[in-house]
Amino acid sequence: MESYQQGLAIAKRILQADPTNVQAQRDLSVSYNKIGDIQAATGETQGALESYQQGLAIRQRISQADPTNVQAQRDLSVSYDKIGDIQAATGETQGALESYQQSLDIFQRISQADPTNVQAQRDLSVSYDKIGNTLAEMKQVEDAMTYYRQALDIDQR
Image (tube, rainbow, N blue to C red; front, top):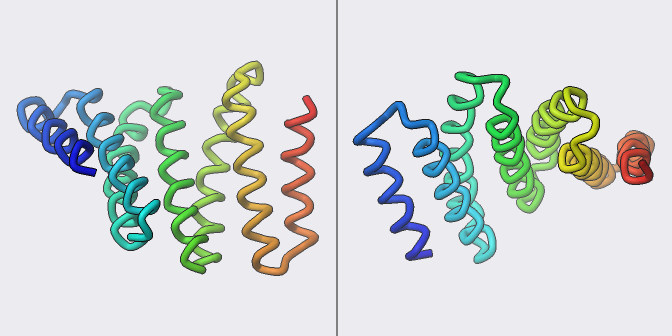
């Protein structure tokens, strides 16, 4: 955690020196996510959620500035997934479902833009599974099965 916090401080200083530096912005969002990962692993769910939300805000700005940047779009989707994971872990299933749906929407666009991108297809499959899991938790089994089938279709290809 200390190392990630030092990295966060460095990323902030670099960004203060050059606020237009997109790589520094991305690095800052990665630092927030790494801190959130440690917080989530140690049970600090509220802190993790806040860290992930800070990373998300940065990633939203980056992806809006260049909607054609696939890495920025994927980063944004990963942030929604991380927030959804915390929401699911804390019993906020409706919030988790909404976060996972936002992630899915992005992964669908990425995978449709390049159907040969194996990583994008895997990301899409995982998104379908996460939504399926959440719907199953909400006792919406038939809807969950629809998402599981979509994941399976991708996995079989």
